[in-house]
Length: 257
Ligand code: PEP
Image (cartoon, rainbow, N blue to C red; front, top):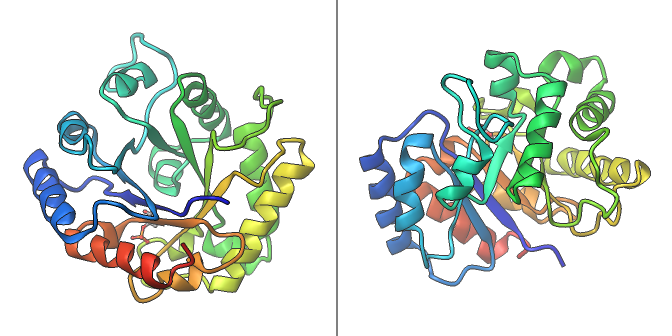
């Protein structure tokens, strides 16, 4: 059975001081033993501090981006080795904000996924259609294009198993207060699993698929009780410790864990 998962994406929010305050409050508000795996994807500047603060807490640490080579003349970039060194275990790849504002495309995304896997970092690979694509009825096509773009040519003959996490994030639902419907998101998560199987990346039963886009404590159960959805990727509602703790509670109480 796949363990449910909650991933916080803090985006470009929180100084080191604010990150430390969040952790202190959050750990006060939540039980030490959780049926949910919790990952905090923090800004680079807070990662080393958080690695220390989260040690023995059961919470996992994630980055929001990385470049793919081990080192080199790439001003402003961070490598997988650097993330590993400070104890990062997860990395968001292909988030729609990286695609949209930083021009990230499939070739780069694929190199990042490959580098993360090669270094034992778990990629949380984000895919999702935008408003226009949704209205044109192209959701399935776009998901397939993005999946193949990110995974094609990778050496995945042992299957994806637990090496990677997928996040279905419809772009129109991110930060808008308008989430997808649970059953629609479940259908896309099911499509993702069947596409992976079709492509020979099986067994896929262990691959966790998250939903992201305007998730809050009041609606999380609509997603995490669906058959194919194993948790949530959360932006806005992960920024305040009380809100994020409420999400964990909602998921533990009635979220299908
Ligand atoms: C995100 O940025 O991945 C996200 C899902 O944001 P929000 O929860 O704010 O919609």
